[in-house]
Length: 94
Image (cartoon, rainbow, N blue to C red; front, side, top):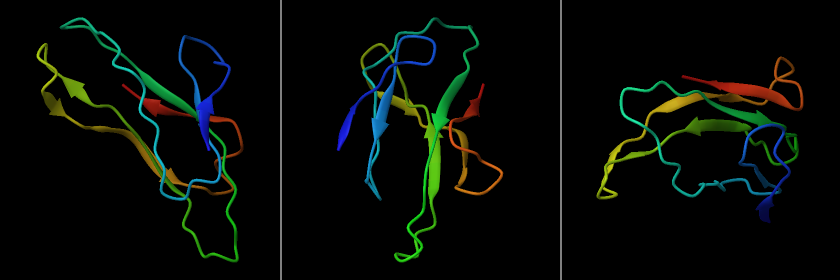
């Protein structure tokens, strides 16, 4: 199930529930050249110990040129569900 959620701050929010291999991709967000941006996501997860899942996640940005040709797909952050990542944690980077 995929839907939008109320943003904590800013303009965009999405949520996935019960999607082991799912992903979300927002609409394109215009940016300006030679400008720094930060990408963050609020994460909350729970593992089902009966399935042996790893609970891995990646926050990724896709960059396109003016003709919508993909330029790069760097990871802003990645990890797994652990006790050090409490529900509602903000993760990300420049």
